[in-house]
Amino acid sequence: MGKFKELRVWQDSVSLAERIYLVTREGAFSKDYGLRDQIQRAVVSIASNLAEGDERGTNREAVHFFNIAKGSSAEVVTQLNIAYRIGYLDKATFEELENEAEKIRASIRKLIQARGGTNPLKMILWPLLSLFIPI
Image 1 (cartoon, rainbow, N blue to C red):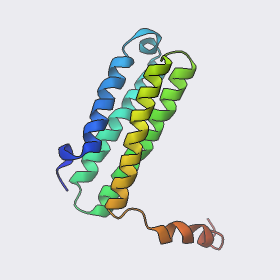
Image 2: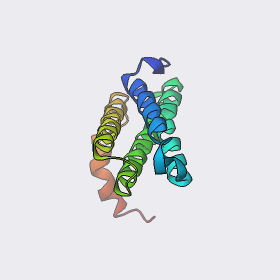
Image 3: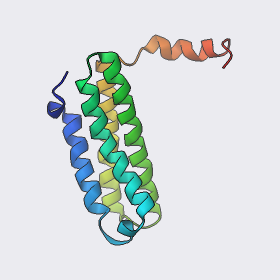
């Protein structure tokens, strides 16, 4: 813990943020303040939450922030899809950025597992228990 700059997934997420910022400075994307700002915030959130999680004192705390980073990566994938569908990104740029975001999301999943954040027993039992526990 505490060496987040050495995490390959952190390095990849910073590179993705840089690329997203460059793409959102051009054309119609630059004038769509809502989508532009949202994707920029989401992509910055990935690297930021990986760093914060890695600096936390326990794996449990780290996993909490890694899950937030994973959620932010899903946001970026969604926003890239929207940007492509409305014509802000060409197909090659979209596919490249989406593939990178998906690779980061998969890496975060593995990091969560490595830090003990995924308990297969919980994943199986929770749906069963939720049938008997009122929400």
